[in-house]
Image (tube, rainbow, N blue to C red; front, side, top):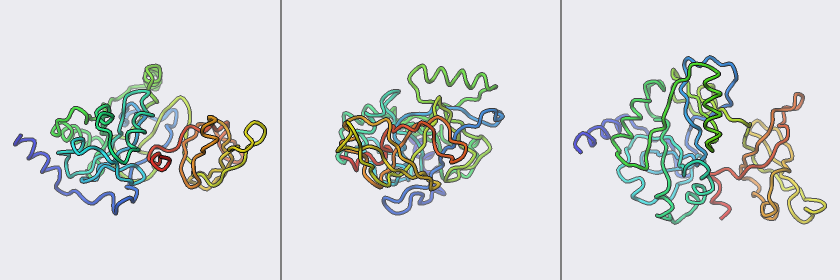
Length: 286
């Protein structure tokens, strides 16, 4: 216990207020799509967990958008003052479960006991990812809580091994892979240091308007008029259930969609299909 206390105290030194005021989005490192053919020498590979991004600012667990997550007190009891970046996860295929659990304003204790917090980075650590990894593992080990786990990281020697690992993860019900540059420091925003590799492309867009449906969708949603982070706008009309067309994502919310490449001229997504409301906004629909 003494060693654990000393280690957590040491990790707290140099900790800074990372998330800012309540409900302000934390400055998180975001992923770009993996570029085929990239030299793998400097990259760590892990599974991409299909859950809800959870940022521990040293006092409070927050969503990617900055909202406080109403976790039971026991879930975060004894967590260090140093920030942690991770994913709240309910296992492969458990996205709906974790989303429903996190969206509750009053925590469901039994539901939270089925979640894990998969820690993949230490945002306030000054070192490279190669240097952050042992510190991260030591932090999680010192916490000594079975529901908090360090994300396993590995190296792969070739593109063939990378694709084989991707097929293995997807065949087992996983979403894909994450690749993190070992020589990189933690920098907020989308850069070249964190990459995602999946068997399909996906992205996010903000809902601008609801377009009315026609034919059998008359009186319901026909499509969402959405805007990408770089300002491109398009109609997202596929992938909705009847229930989602009757109660569509509200204007101003962010949605995730799948697509198959981009149109050469416009740069807009090809065959875009609605996937879901972004996880950290689910509570607004309750």
